[in-house]
Length: 238
Image (cartoon, rainbow, N blue to C red; front, side, top):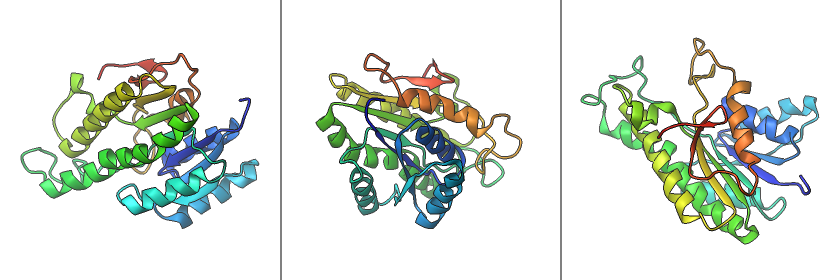
């Protein structure tokens, strides 16, 4: 990079988000960890100092508008801009082992709670970040979605999680279309089934593998894709 760019990664105190933040910092981005619990975010940043990486941390709860406004403003304050936004924060509240997995029995309140984090949360942050990107006519927005929200192969169970990710894909497409005349790329990605607190120990993929597509999307050239859904660097069906 000819200049230092600023990257904000939400939910980056652990798991995939933490690894994305690490990889961005290694590539020379001024990387900001957004964490609902700032102490946990700082613990993650401190752990990376042994690798020679210096990451900033901001308190950011994607379900709280005031927190989003403060967190984005603080992240932007380091170099007066945000160049890359990775919407990683998410929840999976209706795993079959936790709650009745069928759509006919899932509590509507759980649907609303899931959407608040997985769909409305990313939209809140995008709305705050895009004006900064428009001022610079540069931006890369990456939404961590899931193949479970893929309409082409939609199956049963986990309706709250599935629907929230399908809706996030719709948000991705709509905002990409609205920004199509700018140099702001907006894409979604499926990280795979990853060995994290959410994915569980049986998952076959590592966080290192999962983070690669996010890094690729964060460094897209000006003629790169926008409004797409990607897995391992290749476009997949919605």
